[in-house]
Length: 218
Image 1: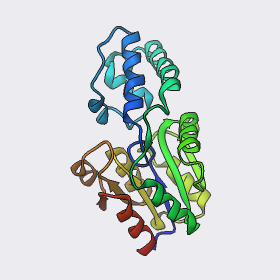
Image 2: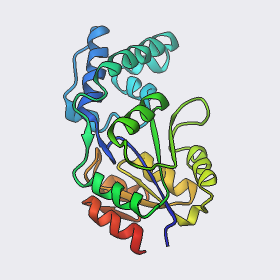
Image 3: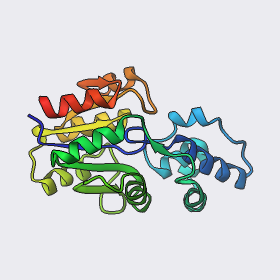
Image 4: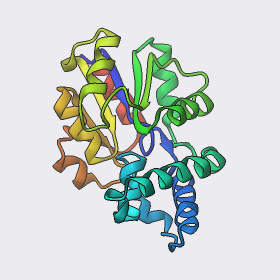
């Protein structure tokens, strides 16, 4: 029996790829680089802004000042884009509302900066009763380090073996495995089914209705 669920945000609950890509491409333009196709960002995002910048501009891994400048630039541009094209995936609102009606404990854990994580959750899911919402900050290392997810489990008061962790990337599945959660992948997000399975997914769902059935009947 699952007693709670932790969701990733981008690519799991929220289809946000275009807004992220547009902000990142404006950073590239600011630094005299060529923009990247939106679809390429499927394999670039998921591990936080610093890693995104390193993947786009590898020299930022060595040049600390440039990395900070790029990250600050991304924050400025994403401030203008974060809710322009993003939207919940089809079926997500039904899933979340059904879980809320059952008072099923839910949390969100993202590698997106915490301020943007909380803003997105508040804006796109205002009626949903999330018990905890955590984005990346200095409090915890980024996923797949399990510290933040383990803290969420402690805050919820639920043992790791009774928590389902739902995400769309290898980072999410590795997080679930490291923390001792039941790793659930979703195929509608940014990465492939094979990547999810190879990274530890116990099951991969193709639609939120399937996920609801698994959470409330197992």
